Length: 332
Ligand SMILES: C[S@@+](CC[C@H](N)C(=O)[O-])C[C@H]1O[C@@H](n2cnc3c(N)ncnc32)[C@H](O)[C@@H]1O
Image (cartoon, rainbow, N blue to C red; front, side):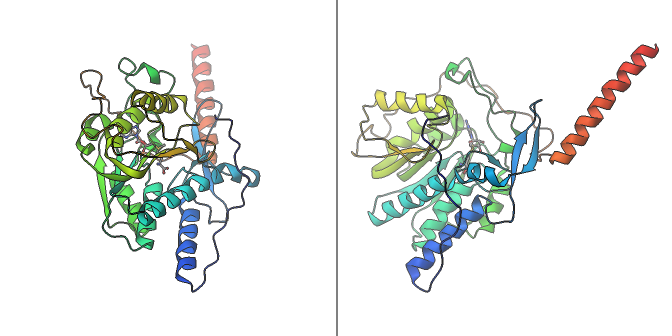
């Protein structure tokens, strides 16, 4: 984890009034509370016990700061991004619109779609209909790690996290639920297969949230050349994950990118592209490192996570089974 402190912030929406700008900001603040699942009486988090088994439990009052800062895995929220990063994302969208920065907006690594919903909602609130928000994801979770091609990722493997695998139909449903189903496009598939097809795009905002070295490098190298001058490159996992940080550092060094990196919060960073040619479209290195293999993970039980009570019962059943097996073995 990074050494940037997390913020102590009481979550709450802005008060609405009949002033259109105040109403727009109040709408977006309420939306962010909804996306992070901070509007209810309580909120649940995805936790794991000492055996590494995942289960759901309520966040305690003193733990709410984890959600506010985007540190825990929300059981029901639409995004794992915290309020500081969401505020900043909204600000970036407003700025590129205000400055007329050319291009669409793309998030690579969307999970349930919450951050993309915020980008679309911000555009809608400004009356912008001529820009598309693109959602790129496998919609089936992380690929199996390819340690041979990407030894940089030898320390992480999220491919067994079934709850990260959110089917595209569910993500579309989430966008519809928030009134953001129009003006969006989906790019389903692993980045190694899809990113080459996005390299011709022109972007005002590129938001990277794929966690690993591989995912960050693939998306950065194919999307950054299409980022317009004045547009924002946003990296969600820079502080949290050294693998992601390494990809960003290597890419910036390889392309002499000197635009100052701004810290958003304990993990998020961004920079504003300063020139039209760093590097030029079509000149990004081809990131695939070797012959393709099938890296899909076979997922058995969907992405439902048991509640704490179900998990405790399951643990009890497992213990009873073990005892029964021992008793049977002793009786022989
Ligand atoms: C941390 S989650 C994204 C969180 C999301 N931006 C939010 O607002 O909560 C990472 C996402 O990246 C996707 N992902 C990671 N590596 C990928 C790859 N190589 N190809 C396609 N999708 C990938 C996963 O499926 C997952 O949905």
